[in-house]
Image (cartoon, rainbow, N blue to C red; front, side):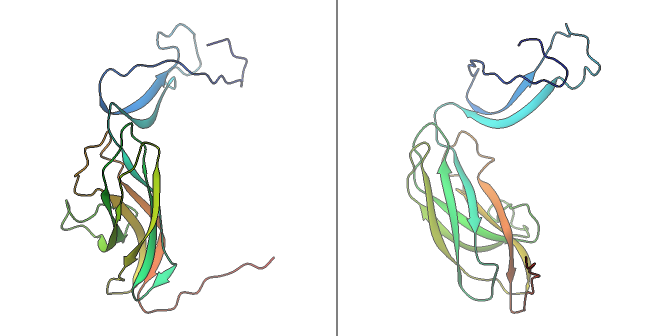
Length: 187
């Protein structure tokens, strides 16, 4: 890395080789040996994103959308992508309404506050390929505001490079038989 003036930054790339396969967190440390005297020495490291090394698929839900409110059967939409290094077989996407912004599903957590709304099947995907499609959903009983969420391959039938990134949370949806007034700002 070149010398830096006060307030300057340097962005660069470096070759890397994984030491194994699986899910890892990328990280970087500058001046690890402590050769440069600094005002703050404890801020020279940063943890980055999760990355999957090896040969396999990695399914993720990149979006889940629905209407602002519903009290009868309605339609949801989701986009699922394979960000892995190998093709993925087909898988199911399960849609949930959750009282909180953490989508845990119901297969591993029978006491989960999430309520299953519906599901759809995603066809096999090549690396880098995505699939966007609709799903029929049924509004659960009881009114309230819920977070929409989706989990792809919730049963874990697809062996993936990263298993912990199969869920996403979307916007709030009002479910039930009540009005929902929204303020609109006129310009």
